[in-house]
Image 1 (spheres, rainbow, N blue to C red):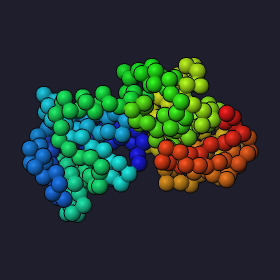
Image 2 (image 1 turned 90 degrees about the vertical axis):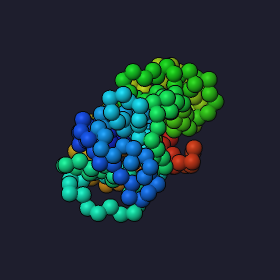
Image 3 (image 1 turned 30 degrees about the vertical axis):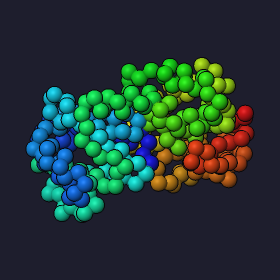
Amino acid sequence: MPEGHTIHRLAQDHLARFGGRAVRVSSPQGKFSDSAALLDGRVLTTADAHGKHLFLGFDEDGTDWVHIHLGLFGKLGFGPTPAPPPTDTVRLRLVNGEHYADLRGPTACALITEPEKRAIHERLGPDPLRGGDDPGKAWRRISRSRTTIAALLMDQKVIAGVGNVYRAEVLFRHGIDPYRPGKDLTEGEWHAIWDDLVALMHEGVRNNRIDTVRPEHTPEAMGRPPRVDDHGGEVYVYRRANLPCHVCGGEIRTAGLAARNLFWCPGCQKL
């Protein structure tokens, strides 16, 4: 599932390609046809992201939003016009004179109102990529919880946008055992985690990939080969089970937690 930096990047990409101009809107698959007909020919004026939720706003009054959640299988891709004939898997297609965008296989694609959009924001935790969001809101839940910090970081009601990669990597960077209960964190530790997520995820938006290793642990600094993986970035523990830690040389561990594979270094992340 895409992490929050990808969704914020998609919001920027939509504005760059379609913002301020009328767009043709269709649903070749048919599941979004009625809503697409209401939007066809209207102006896309804004795009917003909160955690793993993408919102495309039409017209100045901001009353109509397309809400998209990619989920595990959704894909959203762009290309230049002329657009190729759509396949029957395309849920939503946007087209203008220069670009097209195709959405396939999302968990959610719905036309919603401003109050419905506000309700989605209200049920989500603060997002490190939304400048006005308050990390104290997440801390109030974490500080009272016996749930592991690794599970809490994946709970979108606690903090929005963090996925499996950022979860594993930020805990490693701060030397925090993933099985530590939230209530055992100090407020200082939480704010250090939050600040690090803000920096890492903004870098993820800029580079369109996740890199979490510090300068002294890059392939060039360590004389090691670069990492080859689907997400494309340099990491400490994610998908590195049974390999040596870049810092202590110990073996990276993996286990199931919160329905996802957890990765950590017992030597660097002591309980």
